[in-house]
Length: 41
Length: 233
Image (tube, rainbow over all chains, first blue to last red; front, side, top):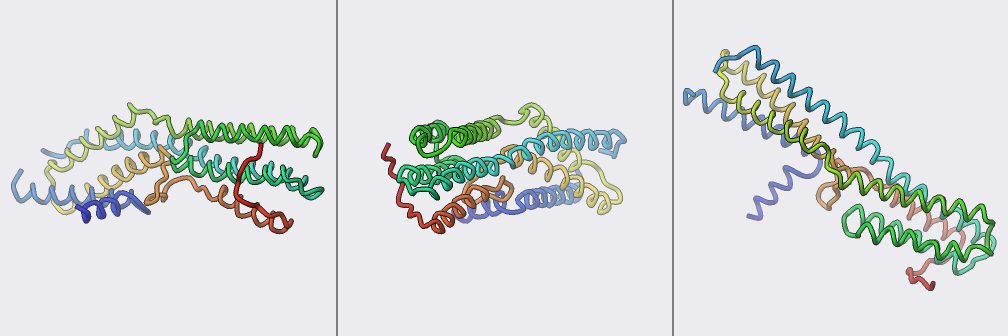
C-alpha cells in the first residue's frame, strides 16, 4: 500500500506531472491498441 | 471500425475546446501571479513608513508595528497553504488600525493615509486571491472537455489501423497532446493549490518570503532588535 501511494505521488504530483500523466496515457492506449490487434477486435 | 473523415473533425473540435479552456485559465493564472508580489509591495511600503519613523526615534510602538507586519506575512503564507482562515487574516490586517491610531503624534497625516491605502490594497489582494482560489472555472466546459477526450481515446483504441505501427504512432501523439492539455488545465485552474509535495505549477510565494528576509536585514542594519510578537495594544 505504501509503495502504491509513493508511486501515485511520484506520478501525479511534483515537477512535470502533466508530462508523466500524458506519457502514461499514451503507453496505455498503445498497449490496448496492440492487445486488441492481437485479439482481432 | 475504419478511419473516417469525421474523426479529423472530432480531433480538431476537441483541441479547439481544450485551447479555449487553456486560454481562459491562463488569463486567471497570470492575474494570480501578480497577487503575492502585490501583497509583498503593500507590506514593504508600510514597512518603509515605519522605518522612517524609527530613524527619528526608536519608539516601541513602531517596533511592534513592524513585528505585526512580519506576522501578517507569516499569516498570509499560511493562508496560501490553507493553514489559516480568510477571516483570521483579514482581522489581522484590520488590527493594524490600532497602530495607525498611535502613529498620529509620530508622523505626518499623509504618511498615515499612505499606510492606510496600502492596508486596503493588501486586503484587496487577499480577497481577490480567495475568489480565484474558491471559484472553479467553467465546470460545464471542463466536463465537456473531459468527456470528449475520453470518447476520443476509446475511439482511437478500437479504430482499425493499417499500416498498424504507423497509425499507432499517430494515435499516441494525439493521445499525448489531449491528455497533457487536460492535465495542464486542471492544474492551472487553481494557481494557489499549495501542499508540501507539489508546488511545481503554482504561483511563487517568493516575494512574500523575500519581504521578511529583507525587512529583518534592514532592521538589523538600523540596530532595531525584533523580539517575538506579543501585541501590547
